[in-house]
Length: 198
Image (cartoon, rainbow, N blue to C red; front, side):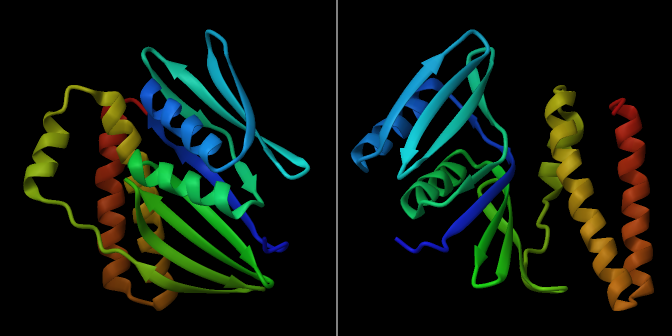
């Protein structure tokens, strides 16, 4: 195992049903991890032994589903691969920071897909990849017709974060037209947030 291997998972937004948690436990046992789990009315906890460290994954109960909560630093490559498979399988959201040789690579993941990849070296950062937003008219119509304001609010927060990144990049590049367009979109989002009472 690479001793300098370290991955930090922040802002995890993964939702599960009980079967997916059971599959995760099965995969961890199959990979040879020593683990135990416990359950209360409020949460499901999986404790995984990785060498001398104990990693505790916390799943908050939400009616008949679960949501992973907390930030995690993983220094075990296999466990990291299992968590990333979980992010993809649940189409979850996360910010993943990989520390390697005095360099940090930050992945922004939305709906199980990398939307932005940034490399940080000291004070400098370089955008390696950024996915352009692809939103169809049908998706927009569905979002506005949605009666579930809670779901729309969660998506709107991610859209807001993304649009702030777009504005920042436009300002850094000195592109006043793109910055103005981004500001207009932010004003529209603010109006929608007020309607949703966020």
